[in-house]
Length: 193
Image (cartoon, rainbow, N blue to C red; front, side, top):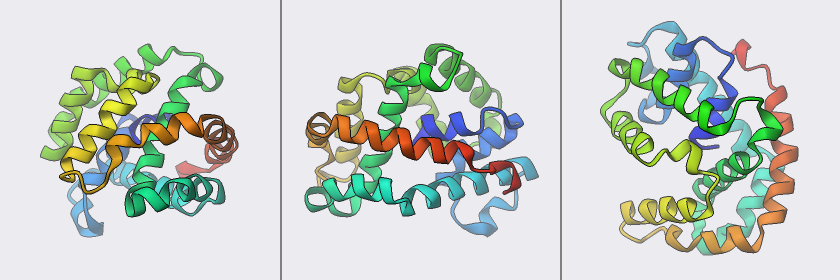
């Protein structure tokens, strides 16, 4: 699950929970999160629980299996991007608000609370806003661009720059798996974490 899905899943929570959820990947370990307000810590815990659920779910693993031979340990990262793409493409199935409105609301919320964001997360937020990434996840060519950018960050080791080929090849399989997976994900009681 990437940024769009994470933010969607905490949209009904207090805003600090969404902020914590968004920045969680940049906060390593339990000790590092203790300096943040409790709601941000809750958001970090929710982010980690979402990732654990996804990484161990049979449907998510089925999708990564298609990618594993070619992308090895980067397969789950690619799946996260694919799932955000499918969520964006099917947005109106999950929300009454448009994806554009949701995206702008999230950018505003995160910018308002940027003093809490680690430097790495601030850089991501700047890029996301500039590219309107949450909204543009619905665009396959943007997914290709994101994957190429991520591949570049690994000095080409990941090979992710070509993964859009698998997205196109197995799009229907990924869509069907995502729809079933995400229904289960939406039923999780994230407020209890």
